[in-house]
Amino acid sequence: MRTKSSGTFTLYLSLVIAMGLSIIPWSNTVTSMMPNWALLALMYWSIALPHKVSVGTAWVLGLLVDSLSGSLLGQNALIFSLAAFFAHKLYLRLRNYRIWQQALFILFFLLLMQLTSLWISQLSGAGNSSYQYWYQPLSSAIAWPFIFLLLRLVRRRFNVQ
Amino acid sequence: MLKPLKDGLSFIVHPILVSINLPSDIKQWFSENTTDRAELIKQNRQLKSDALLLQVKLQKFASLEQENTRLHSLLESSFKLGEQFIAASLIRVNQNSNTQHILIDKGSRFNLYKSQAALNGDGIIGQIISVNPLTSSIMLITDPNHAIPVEVNRTGLRTIAAGSGAQNTLSLPYLPHNADIKEGDLLITSGLGGIFPQGYPVATISTLNALSGEAFMHAEARTVAKIESTRNILLVWSKQQPVPLLLPKRPATDNKTSTDNAH
Image (cartoon, rainbow over all chains, first blue to last red):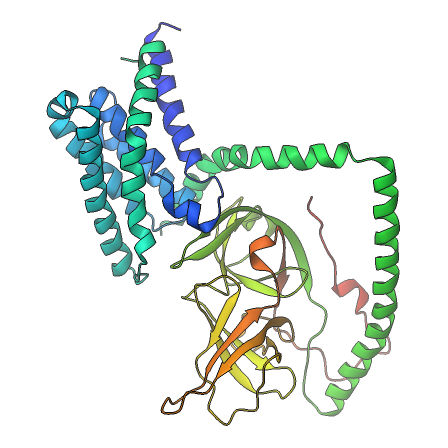
């Protein structure tokens, strides 16, 4: 378990589980309040281990999420790449933040990403959004401390580095 | 152009879809395998009586079908009855007020094609919008970007029913004030547009509201198929080829309709 490759496997497994979590069928209201699990997991790993999760990894992950969720191919890929890019730029600062400050950062960042996503879907002609569309950044920010602590536990337990 | 990439991605993510679906599959398998004998006998009796009832209806249907085809051929118009079906089951639902799509477990491996009509036991539910090798996604008729050509079964009035984004609700935006329509009228597919085969039930009129000053009536309809609780979906091949005008001595209507049962 202490080899380098097993750590990589754990990392990718957690990303796959996060993708799976985001497509579990719920009722409409619950679905709109589900945090963006895959993006949160990606952000954790690119803040904690920026040398392991590149923008390219994020792009591929985003393409897979696009394929899973049936959205426009490249929509999530762009957003995931942006998230990884900013996490790489800011990881030294983000690591020093407290968890609630990180959650606040996640909130504003995801609001921005949700806006970008809205622009992209308006360009492709599937615009009009309801206010439920904006729940996801909030729920993601609330879920961030739990994701952070859980994935940190996973990282230490399985010695991902 | 991006089709190979999309196909490849859908192959990669298919294990995730299957594993997410696994608990409900296991639950179904478990409940199927641990049902009581008495319960099974009861179900069996119920199904047998249902089958009997349907068979009696079908006897009449066969003769009606022949009569209808004969009458249509007398009128020198062509009409098609009896299409080919395939059954598929639901994998994933993607519903919000903007998009109402579902994913099913059959794809181009079974020769499904884009804009193929999908229905369940009660009526039309939607059409295929993209086909992957193993899965395909269906846009429901309640999607706000969807519209379906319908006619009123009672009067033959043709109109268009658009999706409203709300569950099981369609809106009819192009009904003039003097249209002969009332609450409870059944809307069936009109077959215009060439996507949906003619004559399948779509919705029943639920509210009619004639606002003075507006050009059209405000009308809403409830879909016949209970879309949110459906798991088994039928896809119909509606190649719009007409029946020959002169009937052969014995029309082979029986082997036109074949079903492939999944699960």
